[in-house]
Length: 263
Image (cartoon, rainbow, N blue to C red; front, side, top):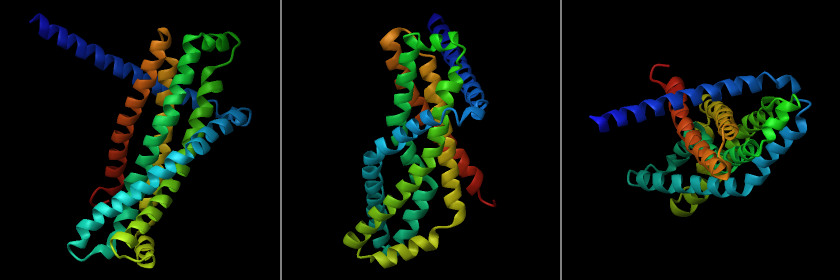
């Protein structure tokens, strides 16, 4: 019975911790949004964060995007070729990229590169008492640190998604031509036929929400870091895990909301 009680106690504490931290993250997001009036004053920091999320991840996003489109085309095209329908591969590639793979791939890359960096940077500032120093000087961390990061990642995530979709289609076209015998003209014709407005705006809406969630979660973990370097490492790891789980859950519910049968 003692072992069972310990398990129940552990689960209860874990649930309470998750709920408490979720509430803290949501409040942190809304408090930071309350400082949007200072967006012009913080424009330099916002531009720096946008540069980090864009130019510094350009190489990784390029490679991942091309191979995402290539793998998707190859695997799906092999199955379609058995039924003589390989010419329709462009329809499947663009639908999959715009609805799911585009925003999801961009989110995974930015979680690993930018979200983890945000958590580590703010965590280091927290354990070295720089956050406390800002508060002593009446500078709110939500204004000075969190708001520029949330705005920057919210803006850059849809941009990264469009880039992923574009390169994914290019990579898919190369594989369709070289492995499936589908010409570039036929491939792009089917892509344009299936590039409908709803799938595009739903994908970009997902990217927008992903950007808000990743930046808020990463900043929250950084600001709650403690116990020196070990605590910073733990906060960074937890921010990556939490961000990944959250975008999976959010992505499912957004898809269900917009593409549910009968809607």
